[in-house]
Length: 398
Image 1: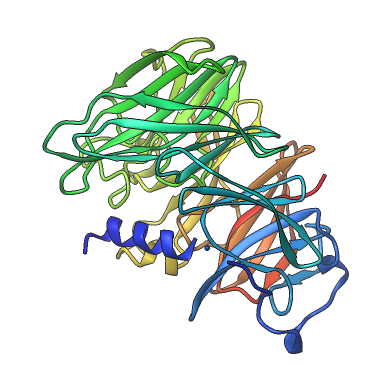
Image 2 (image 1 turned 180 degrees about the vertical axis):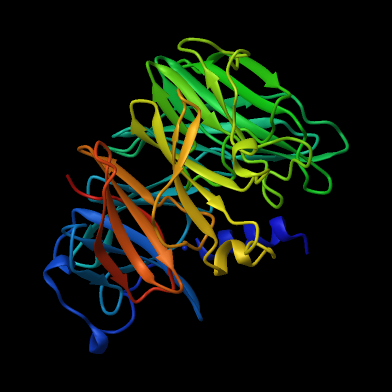
């Protein structure tokens, strides 16, 4: 089976039902396990299952999945204002999380084969079918008010670039910037290599009208292959979007991974800006994710080519380094952190001048490191126990 298809199949299975983690006989208690301000998500490998668990602080102590948290399934990792949102089988379900229990509040049916999801603000979620198979090039969306779980608008956008001999289109981002919704996407050939072209669709929001599509040949696979990853930063109202030309995901053999710029209000990729990440990394194209630190800086992860040797290494080996990139100076600086595992991850939470960086390491355990954005200092914080890997960190309650 094609490795990309294999992973997407496993992701769909691993991402549905809820139960308490492990068993109460092994429950570990600590002051950090009693709070519900922050949420982690991760999994165990045998038998395969995914869990969410919470902590009251990220600075110290530990939280454990042994007897704590809840099992989760479905597509996406959607945590907001004390609720968990599950997308599965064409439905969006809203669950309240309290004291390690998930209690359903409401469930609605969505239009289309709902898979991909993105927050537009604290109470607006947009859910897409996310993929199309040739010759279909229609992207179906649902805009949902999560306060009452009502659909504000649904519809379809038809994008370009898909040829009859191609395999599929994958939506690889969705970001709102000053009244425009930007939608990077990737066109895959029949052999799961992608076209050497970066595609960017945009529409006016909230009308979802005035569809424009721009292309650029300097890189391909604009955005990120997983909705779990951030892929953009904003600076001076301009938008910067990473590309993923790595060997097994974006699979763009003849183009570097890079960062593009979309100027404020524009529907086109800026032809005068190009940050070639691969050239500054000895040709390495294995860049995944981009997380906004403010002031034109962000965090990305880079897979080490000398240890990233097989498809399984993307998820089961410590291969990823962390870098701070400056999109104005076009520089990157390596952070002194252990290597991390699991490619499909959202390992960075930014708030109040700090970046909380989740490092899930087979060799060194699962820890959160606090990065002071102004000073550049790193401090080791909370440990996450009881899971083979942890690939999500965010705030659950304010």
